[in-house]
Length: 315
Image (cartoon, rainbow, N blue to C red):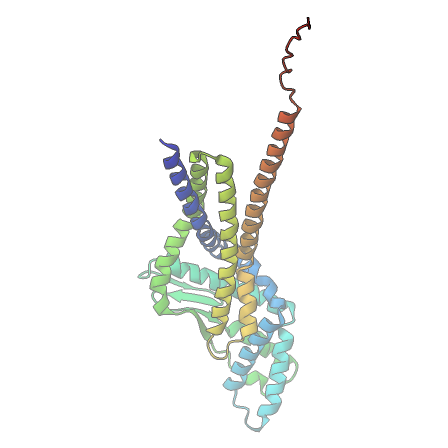
């Protein structure tokens, strides 16, 4: 194989590896991060302390309770007590436990909907449920029951008349299940094979290169560029996600959820950027100092002694 052909194949393999790397990181994050219930609950747990998330949940639950009770002329008083009680409840350990339970049940219901046969699927939990081709929903009744209990203990008027209705909020609409199910199955496969393929292509590109030091530098710079593009894509996706929220959804709360879910992916993008730049810088420094050392050694080697011409005696 000629050197020109080797260089062309090496460049093509290196470029393809660097192109696949950010997609591999994204698919691995989706397949092994978002798809793991334990990791998901651990990621979402700190949001129970986030003031924007607590305020959004308190406003939603409080409005639902007031709407369900016919309080007549006492509406203003009851609304005030209900809002205070719900906001106080979001600062308790019981709320944090309910938050974790709700996230776990909802996540399990979503995974069950994405992985199972739609004709035989039927799953219900204390918070999340999924049945067949129906939507995946989260039930706010357990939270309402705990708030009602607290209001009754505080002797709020008409608190014992609050109905514990099973208010189901759709987290995954039925019409989105079919395309999401297909996409999720692709991600589960790509989450393993894309990073492996990117690594194999990078190794093959370096092995084929005529100048391997240059190939390693190019691979490192491509890795850094992929990490930077991944970070930019996350910022752009956050902007469009918050700009396309349904009416009544708190943008700060949604932003906090987005940031929590993508924290690992942002860390990966920074690691790729830092690792790529560090390797490229290391290759440049070793090449520069290697050349300087070779020049010093060459100048220190004594050359052959000059040949002296014999002198002739003058007559």
